[in-house]
Image 1 (tube, rainbow over the protein chains, first blue to last red):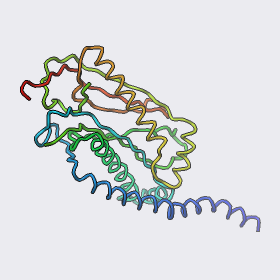
Image 2 (cartoon, rainbow over the protein chains, first blue to last red; image 1 turned 90 degrees about the horizontal axis):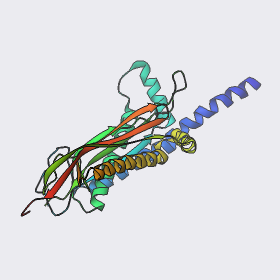
Image 3 (cartoon, helix red, strand yellow; image 1 turned 180 degrees about the horizontal axis):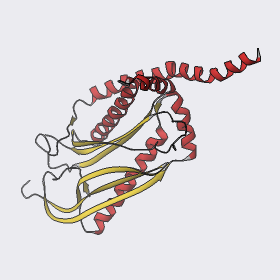
Length: 160
Length: 109
């Protein structure tokens, strides 16, 4: 009887975490994607490009300026668990694909928002980089939950 | 000061190149933020503590670079790039570099 109790106790933590992933994690993700779609639609007027020149006719009265944004998005326990299982047979890790996508899109939205708030209507020469915050885990230690840490920067300018 | 990630500034002529300028900062994670992030790691979502940490670090690197450009007598920095490296476990370096120039508004523009 006592053995069952301890087995239950040991299993309860992962089970609770999986349930959290299924509920809170799923909900956060769905809300985030919905918000990204809304924001992207609202920012459709801001032209984003990765070219080094300035597409369109530039309004020289407004000086161009650098805009940048960071985002750190964490995966939840369930996603990490699914990814670990996926690693056994290999293939696409969809859960992490979504985490990366959220981080990139969020950072892009933020620079466009920043540009728009400053009165610009275009951002060119956009670059994306990743930052490495979690390489802190020592070898042999338990792997921490994955997180995507990206930053995006570009030059905001006014297109006529 | 005009800071851009492109090689040219529309409406401006680059009259003098003052040289390369750079700014960096190494930030380590913070115990309290780690605990908060650890909790957030369980349910997923944005780790706001880390986002702020990196945003601060990025701004500081940029400010240091601008200070250097100012000391060189430049009024603009072109072709700015950001980079990061993990120096030691738990700490990240943010690095901004660019070319300090003197840019004058184009005549007749």
